[in-house]
Length: 489
Image 1: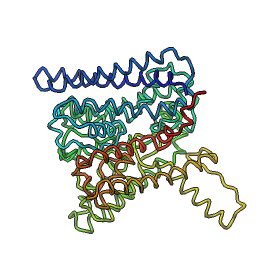
Image 2: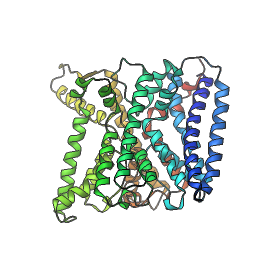
Image 3: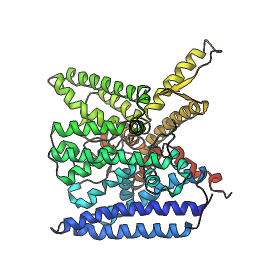
Image 4: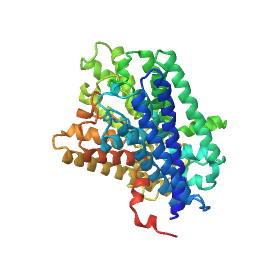
């Protein structure tokens, strides 16, 4: 392990985080003309200064390293980058009045960068707008701070492929002839374009410019931070909900599809399986939940039921977590369907969380093949997804990931019930689902009308670990605890 390479890359990554803090600081100065943001200015100045200072020290330590970023360094950088970003990203929450304790601030920061959207802030109105604008963490985390790093700083060269490969928000397994830096730049352009379009639409529909920008950050990133305590329910506007639902869906699709479209590869779209199954599942779920709400008397008509469940289904399936309804009061059947959607998540290469549709599809195909093999043991099968041949390692990795994710989910639920003795079964299951799969709200005491502020400090740290595990899809975090990773060459 070349620690100078790690220091150099992590140093520049911290500069990016400091730059984002500087953007919030600039907004605070603008707002301070009306005497509204003074408490936030000092907090953001100190936070940006500390982050940039540590970044400079790390970069100076590793600046003379000319070695290529190999696989070991790449996976260590990806794992450590999210931890470092979340650690320094917690500073504005701690230093600004009314302020949060370190466990709460770290949890809030991790929730932002992992685009989970879980919050411990009880009253958002108590915080200055420039601190609420620090929801920029979700926008950075959505595309992946490592991907943005590759797009902006092309000096990484061939090592950038390893960084992109281990960044879970981007799926490059199908390969591309374009240089990795060019592909990252295309992804960033698409991401920025969708964000700007979303913000302009929200502004036109009646949000203030600040609200439109902040919600566009957290919609495209499928993060779910809002500027109001009651989330999207505050607006009571169907047009805003439909506009947000559209861009949540766009964020839940693989961003590699946009790369194919940008490169004119329309044939690839005809082979797309993930998006087809994803839309089919969403449509089926919306129809079923609407029927359940109507037949159980929750709504007076089926049309009203459709209107109630449409936004919630899109929000939870894309792991955004915006709330316009208290789905915790819905019938048990509907809540089970929502739980399944939360576990499944969006498409691979999207900003959404969950297990991802590619793994669900592959697992179903693998299961079908194994069933046939039970009575036709000599039959040879090929495993394909989106028209691409999958090798045996993909079969093994898919099975291992799903089993390990289920194991973490069960262990997390047991751990939460142990650390929080008053937590009931529904809340413990909802908590670990909302955090480990980067959804945000869960069920019970952490449902859409509640938050995570009631958790103890130890539980908040455990929740932070689960969010990072979910965002990096387990492997890039667990490998940091392998002693062999850190041995010198």
